[in-house]
Length: 159
Image (cartoon, rainbow, N blue to C red; front, side):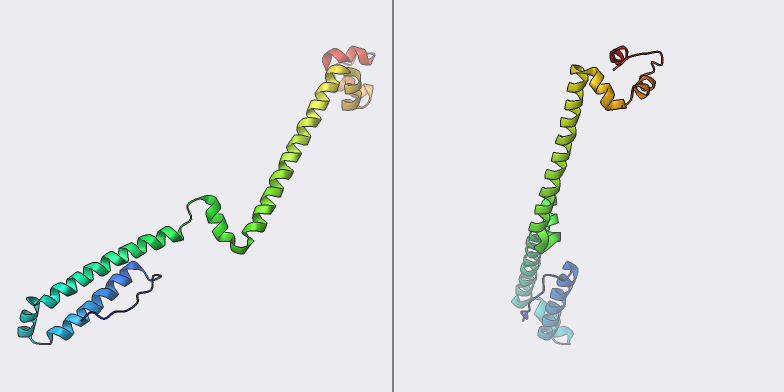
């Protein structure tokens, strides 16, 4: 009859199906023998139907195992995939990613604050802003395109 054997899950589904068929065919050959008379008698016997039922049950079990193992093996989200790939380094990687995100946020905030401070100085004291931005009077004149200006106050409308 059907020999029971453990079929490893890591084998390809086609291999599992072929292995089950070979085992069933082997069992059939043992039961039937080598003569054609024995084959004709065996086809009508209840043993073949039980073997077919066993084959159908094995096929269904194999499909269920494949479905379950594929659900368990494949991560659903990007973070799960990354966590699976990192293994034991998952927690340090999350810590590093959080630190990088915090540093990036701090850098952006620092730049925004500097820009806001510059805008405030530009509105409150344009002369100080021009001195800060361009350094000397000559450089400020040239940068603003006003070569005939004679004082800082003449350049402030062009800020």
